[in-house]
Length: 112
Image (cartoon, rainbow, N blue to C red; front, side, top):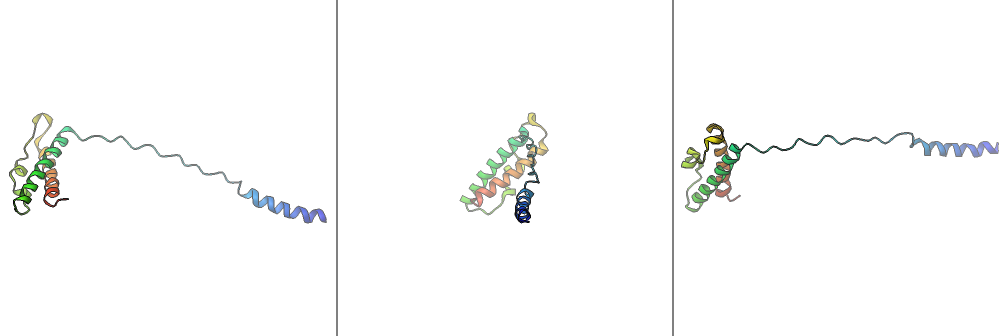
């Protein structure tokens, strides 16, 4: 009887202590690395640089001379200068030039 009284608490303690050891820790492998970033084509890079710089200059000029906000009224916005036919077609150049022009104009005119 004494053995049974002593064996019961030892068995209960062992069961509680060993119950947590029954599960193996879950290991999650890291996912694959992201694909490498590709630089935009040279046509887009040139259009963005030329457009932003032109828009910034025109926006600053209009701000300093007290003109209203009128980015589409500027000649450089309409003509999209700086195009090089060796880089690719003119259509995408003009589109990216004008988007960058508006960003540059806004940044200068609203001092952002």
